[in-house]
Length: 439
Image 1 (cartoon, rainbow, N blue to C red):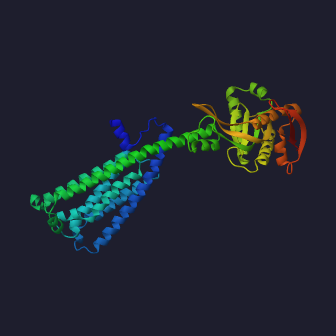
Image 2: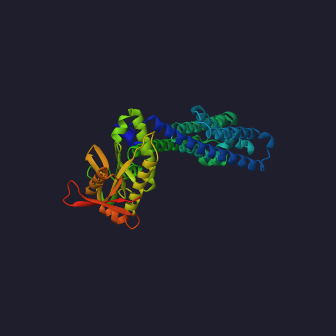
Image 3: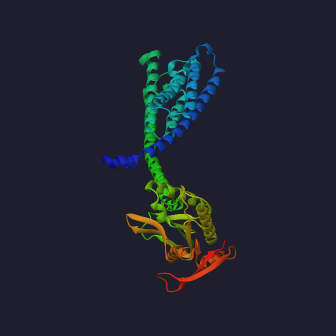
C-alpha cells in the first residue's frame, strides 16, 4: 500500500543501480544547473542592491540604515565567488547548503530592516512585500534536480520567519501586540498570529509541491539519462542509424518486424586474412582489425553507407536500407572503390589487408530477426545473398570488386565497367550477370 502511494506521489522509482559513468554524466548536468543558479543569484543580488539604492533616496534614516548595505556587499562577494567557482570546480555540498542559508538570511535581513527604513515599529516589517521573494528563492532550487536543497530552502524560510515573529514580540511590546481582528491587523502595528502562520504554511506547501515535482522529474531525468546512455552504448555495437531507429520506434520492436526497401548491399572480406591472422597474437590481431574498421568506417560514412553487421573480418554495408539515399547504387560503387584503394595504399598495424567487395542492388527486408528476448537488427533477402556470392566470386577471377546486373545498370552511364561472367547462384534458377569497374 505504501509502495503504491509512494509511486503515485513521486512516480515510478528507478529500479536499476546507476552506473558510475551515468552518475558522472548526471553530476556534469547538475554542475551546469549550478552555474545557472549562481547566475540567477547574481542577478537577484544586483536587483536587491538597485532596490535598496532606490529606497535610500526616499529614506530619512540614512545613519541608522547601515546593516543592509554591509549585508548586501558581503553577499555580493559570496555570490561572485560562488559564480566563479561553479565554472571551475564542482561545488561541495556544504557550500551549497551554506548558500541556501545565506540566501534566506539576506532576505530576512532585508525584511527586518524594512521597519528601520520607514521608521516604524518592528511589527511593520511583517507586512513587507519583500516576503514574495521567499518563494523565488525556494523555486530557484528546482533548477537543480536535488530535492534536499529545496527542503533546506523551505525550512530556512520557515525558521527565519519564526525568528522575525519572535523579534517582533520581544522588541515590540510582547503579547499586547497580538490581535484577532484582521482589519485591526491591516490598519495598525499589531500582529495577527493566524496570518503569520498562514505565511509559514504557504512556505511549507510550496516547498512540498516543488519537492514532489522535483522528485518526479528527477526520476524521469535519471531514466532519460539511462536510456540516452544505453542508446549511445548501443550505437557502439550497431550503427548510430540503426540505434536511432530502434530507440525512436513508436513501439517496442518485435521479432519479424521489418520493411521492404530497394537498396544496395556491399559484402567485404579481407583477402588471405586467415594467413595474416596466423602470424599475429590475439591482441595484435584485435588492434589490427580495430584500425582497419576505423579507417574503413570513416570512408563508408563519407558515402552514406551503414555498417549493418560485422563478422570476423567481414562487413555487411547497406545503402538506402536505414537512411534514405536516392543514389544508393552509385554511392555504393564509389564506396567500394574507396575501400579497395585504401586497402591497397596503406597498411594496418603493419599488415596489408587487401579487401574484396561484392555489390548488389534490389529488394531487401530491413528489420529484426531472432527470438523474442534476443533480436538482431539486420537485412536479408535474395539481394543480400547474391552480394555475398559476388564477394566470394572475386577469388576465381582475381578481381576485388564485383557487382550485379541491377547495380551495373544504375552506374554504367558514369562508371566504365567490364562484363565478367554469367554465374549460377545457389537457390536461384537463373544465372546472374556479373560486372567489375575498370581502373
